[in-house]
Amino acid sequence: MNWGSKIIVGLASFILFIVGTGIYMVTKDSDTLIDEDYYENSLDYDKVYNSKQNLIDDNAKPNVSVRSDTLFIQFVATVNKGSLIFKRPSDGTLDKQLPLFTSTSEYKLNISSFAKGNWSLEISWNQGGKAYYHNQPLYIQ
Image (cartoon, rainbow, N blue to C red; front, side, top):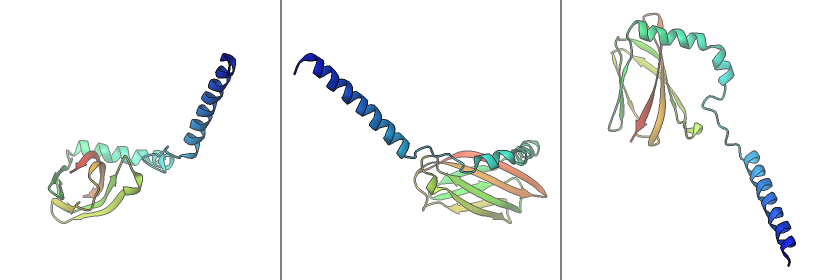
């Protein structure tokens, strides 16, 4: 085999590698979004913005902590009703939405069944006729 044939074989191998990589990237759907319905959520962002502004204006930021296998959320006021959304950035199939209702200012949740690692916790609740929204990263050990 002379050097011209080796160049042709090398170029053909490189082209096959590039085409194979392109096919792999197109067939493997790894472009997961954090929100599946991000467009619809962006249309309702005024509600989220107002809820965040209520949180700042009323200084109602909850204190979130994890001790052993329990999540503690300390609210400023009592009687809070809303939802908790746990989002796993690395795997959207592990996302969970749980109802939230407290008659006291403290909420406890057993998180021993949750996968260990990074989570994003979104708390949206109503208290005293006002809507509040708080988002924070959470690490479960």
